[in-house]
Image (cartoon, rainbow, N blue to C red):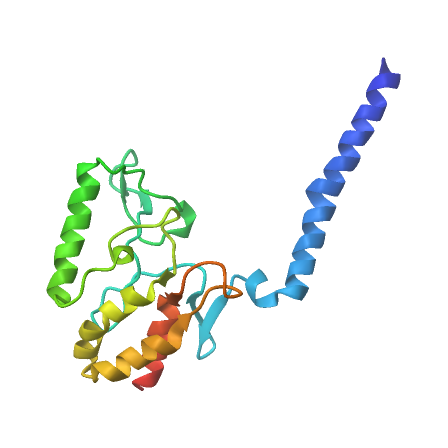
Length: 200
């Protein structure tokens, strides 16, 4: 019996070492050589300090900044561990809200967000990405329409001409990957950093 079990145990140990240790370490090392910035989390630095990642959104509430998509991520309620509280862009708890199209809570939140945004810029239709969350709740990008929609609010808060802010948004638009994949987008953190830099 030991004669039959021994090869199975050896194969298990060898494959575990190869697929569970050697392969992941080799791929991590290779990624670090080929894509060093991405392998380190696509961190964005300003004045020698890490201010965020190009891959994870951040919450900006001040009117002088562009706002990202709503985030549905949550964290345990410190007062009652059986409940959760909103924790926007909480990378430790990535996930959607699981609210379906018939959810009254979702409908009420979207309506409230649309009404607020219409108050900011009544001349344009509200872009859908400014009122809907993504599956991960961490999306760092918005559509060019979402960024351009916010130009009047940001320009007014910073006492800048709208054309100057609009031009900055247009400079930050990233196209489709290889001209085919994805949609044009604007990274909110990169845009806000460029805006801060331009108004120094």
